[in-house]
Length: 455
Image (tube, rainbow, N blue to C red; front, side, top):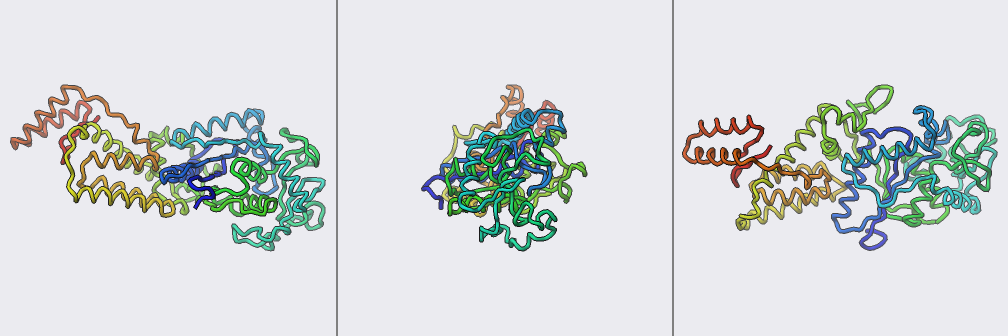
């Protein structure tokens, strides 16, 4: 049940733009897209907001290490601003290849510094945040439900406490997290910096999402998504700082996606198994075959990418494309026959079954199973095509844009002669003609509704 009737506020954690997007990112954002498409199919108006983190995300998800943007800038020999622009552009170009629809609102952290400062001020005024020489920190001990999302208690985070924390020089508690970093010690040369009531510096990663999600969707919204790695730190901190200020739940529903693995192990640059979508395409696979592969695993479960699995997904995707081409080439709509009650019932059954599957916790693997069951059934190809294209508004395999190449008159004539030979029982001659047609680059498929020619 949405907060506003007929409308869903959706916030999806976006990329930190310091390097190229890989196929693991692709799975996460494809899942976001599937969720949004499904909500729209069910009649909801979706307001989709996605952030761009272009400052403040340290190498550690906590408060350790350097800013990822500055690390990326050094790696590629660019300014931090140019690095952000390059990878924002690259990110959305990659998402376009996967047929992922753009968010309604794309918000960059560096464009929302005032909103973040204002939120930190409110936390300080309410006593949830405190100022230190190093940073402004959120005091997790004052938020009783801290760690509720992950099930981890604050006491559990006392493991491996730094000596400086034990001595009380900076943080009051090791789990306290930075809202605003100051330009001292390790950050004295930080390039991205702004004035604030606590001194010149830059925001922490977690405050960005709270400030931007609440600006565009309100203090409470419907759905917040992210990777499963966001649960123990990033989303836990978002909840604490947001709800400490408002006294309201940040999001009604949290959706977390499991990781994509490669050959059964976690992707890692050191292992050389972190592939980009473009690298998959260079191997001859369609990005939409990769999207099909994403559909074969439930979002709560890890998906194992192998070159064998993407090859299988490509084969399945190609079969769907060929079916669309074949069904369209028949122009069945012009001569469609009245369907029996049995077939009408079967069509309605497939439609209901598919929606039941995908509406049940985004069970797209079972949804695909219904797709193939329907295609193999005895209902007319025209109705199969109608169902498939309707469902593809959710699946996003771009089947509506599959074009049918005009079949040359010579090939049509050869097909007509072949049909005559088959009716006369001259199957050897008919088969020879079929092979001649295939040698010219066209495929012949005999269906219950006639012969289908495709290229």
